[in-house]
Amino acid sequence: MVLVQVGFAGLSLVSKLAMDDGMNPIVLVTYRQIIATIAIVPFALFLERKTRPKITVRILFHIFLVSLLGASMNQVLFFMGLNNANPMIAGAMTNTLPAVTFVLALIFKQELFEMKTKAGRAKMTGTLLCVGGAMLLSFYHGHTIAESNSGIHWSYADKMTDKRSTHKSHSILGPCLLFGSTSSWALWLIIQVKLSRKFPAPYTTTMLACLMASIECSIVGAVTECNFAAWSLRSTIRLIAVFYAGIVCSGLAFCIMSWCVHIKGPLHTSVFSPLLLVMSTLLSWALHDKLYVGTSLGVVFIIAGLYFVLWGKGKEAEKARITADMEEAGKYHEKEDSELQPHPHANNESRQDPNRCS
Image (cartoon, rainbow, N blue to C red):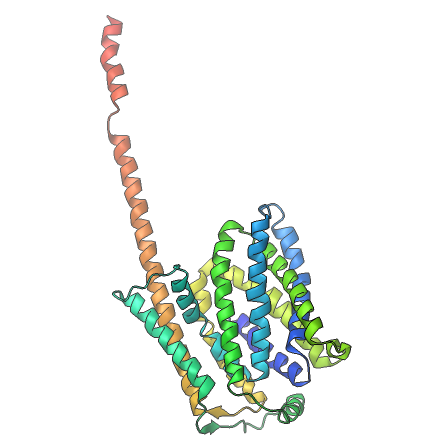
C-alpha cells in the first residue's frame, strides 16, 4: 500500500506538469481510460473466465453509473482541480473521502446515525473536522510559512512552473473541483457496494467501466476540444503522464489494492491514505509551491478527521465481528443440544423391540 500511495503522489506530479505543458484535463482522462482498459483486459479475460456471472441489462446499467461517477466525472473534476491547485491540496482533498462517504451513506441509509455510541460520535467528529479542513484549504490562505529553498531543482519542473506562473491562478476553484471529485468518488463507492454483491467480478467490472468511460470522455472531449493538436502526444511529459496514469494508477494500483482489501480488509487499506498527503506535499516543493497557514491547518484537520472516522469504523467492524461470532456460537450450541436430546421415534422403536422378540 505504500507503493500505491507513492504511485498516486507521482500521478499528481506528472499530471500537473503535463497540464502546465498545455494538455487538456479531459484529453488526459480519455487517454488514461483507454490505456487502463487495455491494461485490465488480460486480468478480466483470464482470471475471471470461469467465475464471471452472467452480464444482464441491469448489471450493465449499474456499471454505466460506476463509469460515469467513478471513472469519468471523478477523474475529470480531479484533473481540472489539480490544474487550478497543487499536488498537496489534491492529496488533502482526497483524504476527505471517508467522511464524505459516511455522510452519503447516511443519506442512502447504508449507515446509522448513532450519537449515543463512541464510534458514532467519532465518525461525526471526524466528518466535521474533514469538512472544516476542506473549507480552510478552499477559502483561507493566511501568511506564508515556508517556500521551497532546498536548493534541489528539477529543470523541467522549473520550466513548467515558469510557464504556469504566466496564467491566472484560481485558488478557490481548484479545491472546490477537487472536493467535487471526492464527492463523486464517494457516490461511486455507494453504488459499487451494491454492484459487487450482484456481480462479484471486480476485474470485469473495472474493464467495462473503463471502456464506457473512454467512450464518454471521447464524446465530451470531441465537443469541448476540437483542436487536433490538443490530442497530440508528441510532448514527452504528456506521453509519460498518459501511460503512467493508465498503467500504474489504474491497472497496477487496482490489482494491489484489490489484493490488500482481500487479505487485510478495507480499513487497513484506508489507513495508508495520509501517506499520499505527505508525499504530495514533498512533491509540491519540486514545483516550488508556497506553504500557507490556512493550508497547513486544513491538512491537520483533515488528517485528524480521517483517523476519527477510521477509528469509529474500526470499532463498529469489531463490534459486528463479535456479534457474528456470538451468533455462530449460539447456533453451534443449539445444534449440539438438539443432537444430545433423545428422539421420540427412536424411543418408540426401542419399546417395540421386546414385543417383537416375544
